Each structure stands twice: as structure tokens, then as C-alpha cells.
Amino acid sequence: MARLKCLLITTLDTDWLSEFAIYAIEKEIEILKVLRCNRDSPSLNSLRNELQDLPDFDYLFNFLSPKLVPSWLLAKSTTAAINFHPGSNEYPGIGSASLSIYDQKELFGVTAHLMNSTIDTGQIIAQRFFPQDAEILCEELFTRALKECCDLLVDVLDLIIKNQELTGVATWTRPPMTRKEFNKWLLITTLPSSSEVNRKVQSCQHPTFAGPNIKIGTHVFSYSYTELEV
Image (tube, rainbow, N blue to C red; front, side, top):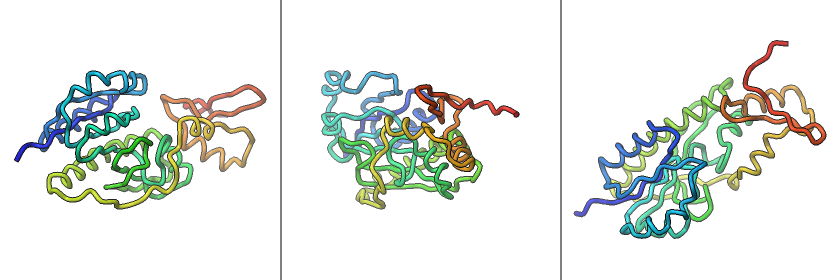
């Protein structure tokens, strides 16, 4: 029986994640090409001439790459194109960890789903959940989700190797949040209760990314990750 073949699209920012994906997949499936991307990388459409020369492959894995996979590339996958989303089916799109913390959830999860032309809308084929600590911050929760995605990848590979049908196990509960919508959510335009402000700060503060933001008149001020004593 011929060995299965795939295209792997993965993250450029976190080496251990991409190396794990390569290691886990190569044990079971031949990788024809690895693409490493981050938010600043050119769109995959810029690689169209190069990628269209690849022979068709059985699977396309988008493992934590932030790039939208165009329809013409999805079509080269003859069996399934699978995305790994570092959030549960309650939080498709951007900002999953922040929204889960803000909503004070007791569990957070990661999701594997079939891909189509719209992000985080395809049939969900596997999930994993873990406890969400009440005091956890965004960076820590997101990092835990990335690690959980490694185990989720192993789960999906196990389904494939055992030739099990990739059937739906859950449904998305809302449309995916866009970057524009998330940036708007980060903005505090009124002064709500101190409890709500604390929830917004806990869910959004991050050592790399600004937020939450406060708008006063036409001026926008970003919360500093450094905690000040007053």
C-alpha cells in the first residue's frame, strides 16, 4: 500500500511546535513540503506557481499557522484538509483565550476541523479540553492550548492511520471572530463596573500585545502589562 502524502503548513514563530508537527507526522505520513508562516509572511497566494507544481496529496495539515489557506490549495488535498485551532468550538476565530477568560469558563479546549474557504467553520473532527484556572492570564492559557494542540495532532493522526472516518463530533456555537471585531472588543469606550474592567484586563493583558484599550474622546490609551502600585 502506497504511503500517504501531505502538505504541512505550520508556525514560523515557535520552533518547538513546528518541529513536533514534523516529527509526529513523518512517522506516519510522507511530508511533500513544509511551509512555515507567521502573520508577517506573504500570503500563500504568492506561492501559487510553486505549490501548484506539487503533486496532489492526501492530506493538508494547517498546524497553528495564522495564514488563510486559499481554495485552490485546499483543492489539491484529495482526502482532507485539517486545521488545528487553539480554542474550543465556542470560540472560533481570533481571541479565543481572551474571550474564554472574560467569560470565566471552567474549561478551555482545542479543536481540529476540516477546512473550507472560511476560517473556523468546517466540520469538527476532534477536540481536547482542560481545566481553566480562575486566575489564569491570556498568555498562559494560550500557551497551554498550543501544547494541547500537539496531543490533538496525535489524536487526529491516530484516526487517519486506523482508517477511521473523520466524522463530526461537535458544532461551532458562533461565527468566527475577525481581527477587526476583536480589536473593537478590546476597546473600552465607557466606564463599566470595576468587576468588568478587571475581567477585561485579566483576559487581555499580554507582554507582547497591547490591550485592553480605553477610548476617551478621540484618544486611545493601551493598558500596560506592568502592574503599578497606587
